[in-house]
Length: 269
Image 1: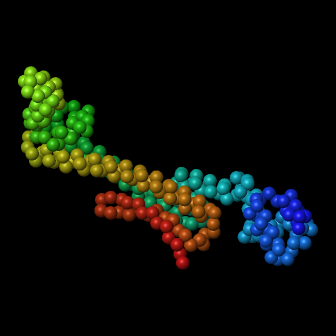
Image 2 (image 1 turned 30 degrees about the vertical axis):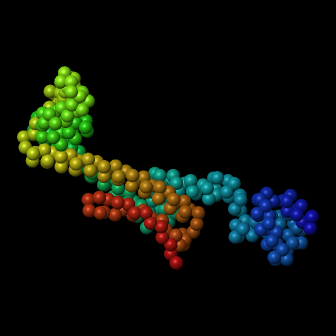
Image 3 (image 1 turned 60 degrees about the horizontal axis):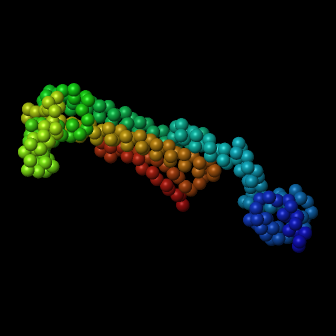
């Protein structure tokens, strides 16, 4: 028996689990003597015990030819274009699904960007024509938020800035006046809406523009998710046969004005 273990230990380098599996297989088949008679036959018999894959260790040891190489290729193809790896692996329907999703996401991105830009130009023009705002393109978001909330800059100064002056300056009239002059809306930034209806339309257009830009950013996120799903799916496919019961898929869905992505993992019984 000592000779048997020495022979196995000197010929194999696949780990203790492989040695035990090989030895149990040989004892089960009653071929211990025959296996030990030849080094090549011993190695072959032990490797055969791993589900009929005699070159598994060699394949994984060489990154240019084994499953790792196929996985790396699948990841690269999917990063370049989701569905490309599936197409190369012969899964044409899956590839078409990823391509449809990719086209939908980037079409949605372009559409929402155009909508956001058009609506932005519209509300900025309204601010100039109906509220008297100058140099409107350089205004930050805080200014535009006040512009959409207050009928005029004078009203904002009287209700907000004077209130803050009383809060922070106490009962000192001189300190209140100084605070007010320092924090009131500058002359070049003043506005006065012609009507409440004009201000409400401005607020609506601004909200629609911001919503469209947000949706365009969501489309980029879905496109990234589509690539991640395609990578995972391609790696799974590259390491198993095409008859597997598992299926991972990213599907675009249109919900009213928005596009959504649904990730699904299914198993066939």
